[in-house]
Amino acid sequence: MKTLGIHHVSINTDSPQATIDFYTQILGLRLIKQTVIYNQPELLHLYFGDYYGSPGSIISFISGKQYVPNADNTISTISFSVPENALGFWEERLTYCGIANQRILRFSEESLSFKDSSGTSLEITARREHTLHNKEVSHSTIPSQFAINGLAGITLCSAHPDATIKSLSVLGLTCIHSEGSISRFSSATTIGNIIDVTTVSSSDVVTSPSIHHICWRIAENDHLSDWQATIYSHGYLPTEIIDYQYFKSIFSVHPEKFYLK
Image 1 (cartoon, rainbow, N blue to C red):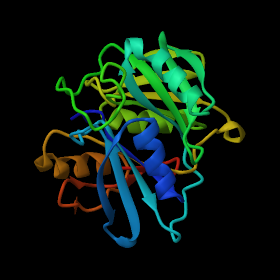
Image 2: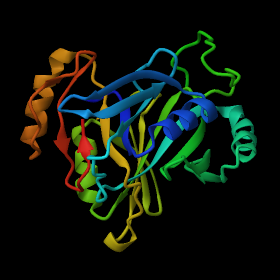
Image 3: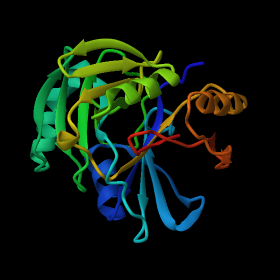
Image 4: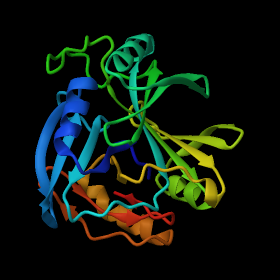
């Protein structure tokens, strides 16, 4: 079995309004859902994505005074996908908005690196294969030819790469490139499909402590019980199937202390 790329990434925030302003007004995403955490209803949960709320386009934020960020995780960066010719637009836009940014090159892909209003590390990556929908929508003032189309992937900093690679293998990802201390893993999709694993020593782990979990896509709800068995057979401890009404999922904890969903 294989997962179909990232469904969403969830982040902790202590400033929901600043988060809404940044992701809608600067990045041009749509606020697609406002809800609460299913087992902690005092915690607000905000979802952003494309107009349709497509799996693979979503980044969500958990806000609440009682929520303690997971400072031990190894998720360092979240990357968004844009068309190949869009980086110049985003470089100019971020600079105009007073957001420091720099161009980086990784595995022949060019990206812009910057931080959001809470200090979470982000990238905007130019991709050929990027389209979730061809239909133009008007929830943002950003021209459609430059707009964010979804998640490109994430970067993990790992002091124990064997454990990380094992978990990615269980999820059905394969290594497609390796360069120095960075290995690139991919799922068989074009959105939310890339995981870059950077091997570092424990003292050099660079994280975004606010990132809480990664959620992966699968084809059918009926496959969840099969995934429970698969995850358990590889030494992980999955939860029961949780029904969020708008999707169902299971949780497991990665050996390096972040959540997989």
